[in-house]
Length: 152
Image 1 (cartoon, rainbow, N blue to C red):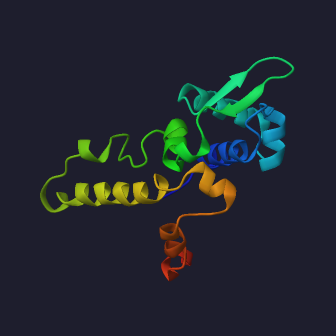
Image 2: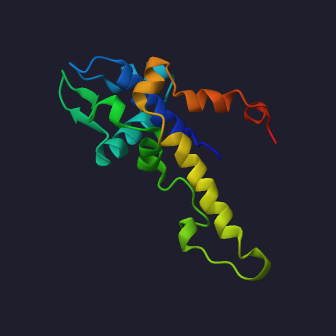
């Protein structure tokens, strides 16, 4: 899986929101500086996250952004989908919408399996897990496998 800069920035921004106080909003400049994200890029990302119902905003001098839900209720897959769309796409289609013929017929199953495995990780890890540094045991176990550290 290729994680785009946009998805990476979105995840980092909401983790930064999750690690802060829920009592007051965080300014875009503050979030951008804390995670080294270009402000103009972050503003667009936060707009998409707001449209998806993951963050809320308030205008004015006391304004900024908050998480719209508790961090325990937001997983990484939701954040990535909000800014990128489906986790696995094939030529702009969802894997279940793709049909192959002949010797490539079973390729659709490969794409579906890939999506299922991505979901196992991304839907299992919440913003609270990452912000607290306490990832689920299953995720830690995956990072201890040699192939997790090998680029192919």
